[in-house]
Every structure is written in structure tokens, then in C-alpha cells.
Image 1 (cartoon, rainbow, N blue to C red):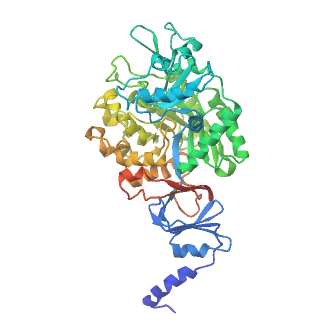
Image 2 (image 1 turned 180 degrees about the horizontal axis):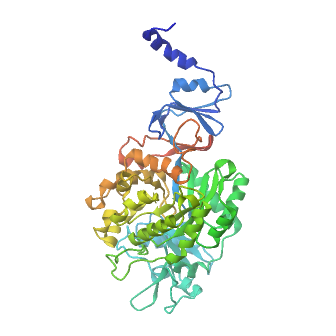
Image 3 (image 1 turned 90 degrees about the horizontal axis):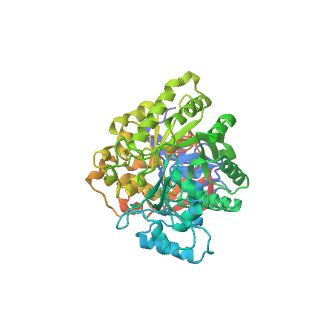
Length: 560
């Protein structure tokens, strides 16, 4: 007999509460503000997890059906539960090394930087190297690169090397120049530069490939040091709320290190890695084939990382026209374009993803051109993976005429919002107003149908998810500065920013069916925050803290 509609409505909540019997969950997350990232059901109150998989998303009342005698019930008391945040571009070992060495982030003046370095020099053995990284001159007055003579004042006897935050330049002192054998007659290698003063003497600044002249003289770290760098980078990432990082460029020796640390249970983070290419690293990946989803889906190596040009801050980004503040420079190309072509064709045939660093408008055009040539040379029928999902890492300065080509070619723009809020202090002078129209063009690229894989480029930037989310939606410095010349219309909405650090990096890693949203059947990767970043005022995003990180259903970080 069919029940009257009014009776059916009365009985419905009871039926749902009692419902069909289900297998008890391992964990219940209740009383949360859940943003699923799933457009069909964008919010919820509770999530149930069995093993490493989500088995329920919905209301608190319905979630109770999954509570058994051994179920751990976690009352989040209104905290915000998001799909596990993913960093689409990081240098993980570099983050760990920054934690272990002299960290020069946030120095507000040359004198402050020198004071920090002096503290380390004063405790160093005479003659021992002193190294650090993270300085950037843009907040200083004047905004000039430091020189060897600046460092000589506080370190006359110890060789010193200090890396600029972008990772594309270092400054050294006279002692380091002497150890390295660099003089006024030393010629820079291709793809690099040695800056000189008006008298033709080295200033101490080395750009891109020239940095190797000094790095070669620094004693290498021990195996224990390298292990600790990885572990510290992993621990910091989990503490900040990252559940996966996409590690942009490693050697096969580092792959072996990560596999050993995973085997020993020392890495809980998901890591998606690219090996360097073109060259022996790429050739080895072609021969071995990709490693996909090892260690319970936590480790994948299926990508080649290449570098097309340098960085904008050190004037190494390759531009179509000279720098507005240095008319004798157009930037640097790290390798001749011919070096990429055979690798790209081989990658398509072998089913290997390719990601290429490109910052300047000329580098981005060259990247799109070479990708297009490879796609035409290897039709879909001859590709091992029909949809290669190749990536343009950074996509910072693009000629507006080239912006539609990303969607046309299926190239993923992998971008770091924090670059825009850091570069706004010097990019206008480097580029001039016309080139800013295609700079950090997140809004335009999204409107054209692209998914932006959001990253941090740490240790170039600080690598904090709340800074990245804030930068994406506010498009202002962390002090709130911006103006109309910085194209505020290119900012992301909060929904877009959430996808940029969850679903879209998952797509860029071929994992959108496994993670990136909170849906039944997907991996139980969550980030839990103490504030609702989808609603609070923009400045408060920067004050928001991660309180819990869950990877594959396992709580791998919980704030005290």
C-alpha cells in the first residue's frame, strides 16, 4: 500500500537515521564545516573513513550510522575540513635544507641580513664555508643586490655563499671567489652570468648556470644530512597542512633516497616527483618506465622537469624585448631549444609527463611552440598516454596573444600565487605596464577553461598554504598593498583558489579520480583549519592555522 505523502515525510528522517546497516568506520569526523570541492554537493557536516577511503559525506546524524565500538570519533567543533591541500610545485629537499642552514627569509635590509650572517660566521671555524639562502632585495632600501664587499665586512676569512630566494642567483664574498678561482677574466658558462662592477671586477653575484662555479667548491653534505633534509621538509609540509607535494626536479640518487625513507616508514606525505631532463635522468625514466602509486599510493615518479630560463628578479627570465630597467638584457635561456625536441618526442611515445620552468614571455612562447611541434610530430595513435597533461611551471609573464594557446594545446599552467605578491615590488620596473597585462594572469586563464595547478615554489617562497590562498584571492602583498596597475581582476574566487590547491593539482598528477575532492570512494586526505577561509576577511586568512593533517585516513599531524 502506498503511504500518503505527509506520512512518508514524517517517517523519512527515521528511515535515514536507522537506514540499512553499514560497516562501521575507522574514524568519524563530526561537527565540521566541510567544503568538499564537489560542485554537486559543496558542503557537509561530517565525513566517515574506512581504511584509507572516504565512505560517507553528509550530515552529523547520518554519519552516526557508521559509528561502531572501535570507531574513533573526532569532534571538530566547527573547524573547517577541506580536501587535502596539495602543493603543485615545491623543492622538498631544498625546504629541508633551508630548515637546517642559515635561513635569511624576511630580512628587511642589507644590514639585517649581514647581522644574521655575522652571527653564524662568529661561531664558524676559520676557513669553513658559511652558507644560507632566502634573501631578496625587493623590501630593502635601496633595492640593490648585495656584493662581495658587503659580505667581506663581516666575513673576511670564511668563504660565504648566500642564495637569493628565487634559487637562480647567489652572492659570495672575496674568500669564496678566491677558493672558486673566479677572477675578472673568468667567462660565464652558457645560460649563466657573472655580474661585474664598473671596473670589470666580479661583484660576487652569480646568475643561473654560473652558480655551479662556486657550488663545486663547497664540501658536499653527508648522507645523514641529506636524509634529514628530506625528513625535515616532509615534517614541515605536514605541519602546514599539505597532504601531497609535487617535487619539481630530482636526481635518480634522490629517488633512491626517497624510496628508502618510504620503506623505513619515515615519510607519511604523498610525493609526486619529476626527474631532471633532458639528459641521463630523462633517458633512465624512458628505459625504466614510470613508478605510479608505490607505497600505498604515496609515491609516484612519472615526470621530467626541464628549465627554459631564469628568474625575473635576477633578470634571468627570457623576454621578447629588453628589460625596462636594464636595456642591455633580455634574460637567459638555460639550454638551446634543440636540446628539448628529441626528449619531448620520446616522452610522448613513452607516456611520460613533461613539466618545464618558463617565466619570461619569450620562454613561455618557446615552450608552447616546442610542445606544439612535439604534439604534431607524435599523433595520438602513437602516444602511450593520449592526454599527456604537460605542464608550464610558473607561467609568469605571457604575451596576451599566447594565453589562448594553453587551452588549445591542453598545457596545464602550474602557477604560484605568492610569486605575484612578492614580485609586485619589482615586476613593474622590470617589465613596464604593457607586459603586466599578461603577468600572473590567473583569472584570464581560468576564464579560458584552464585548470591552474597551484604551487609554492618553496624554498623560493615560504611554502605556506595560507599565504598562497590569500595571494590568490586578494592579489595583494601580505601587508595589503596593491594598486590598479597590478590587475586585480586577475585574482581568483575562493572556490577557484580552493580547487587550485586541491582538485586541479590532482588533475595535473593524473589523480583526480582518487583525491582532490571529498567524495565517497576517494582517498581520505584532509586538511583541518581553525578558521573558515571561504568566508573570513582576507587579512584573517593569513592568521589561519592548520590543526590536523590526514593522509589516507591516518592522522599524520595534530596540533597540540
